Image (tube, one colour):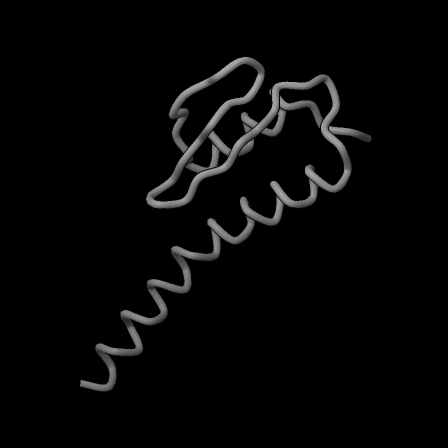
Length: 77
């Protein structure tokens, strides 16, 4: 089932992303140095939907990878 732009934006906001600005029907969100653009359409295209979900998944894993690298460095010292 296709996802709307509003539903995708809600997923990003729930994951800690911030609303930065909107121009027309496109919302720009960010987390740290990462940025993503979400069109506020009734239905997102399948390719765009998958790309945004990939970005969301990678941003969630980024924190875990950072913690692992810090703990690995501490254990070597």
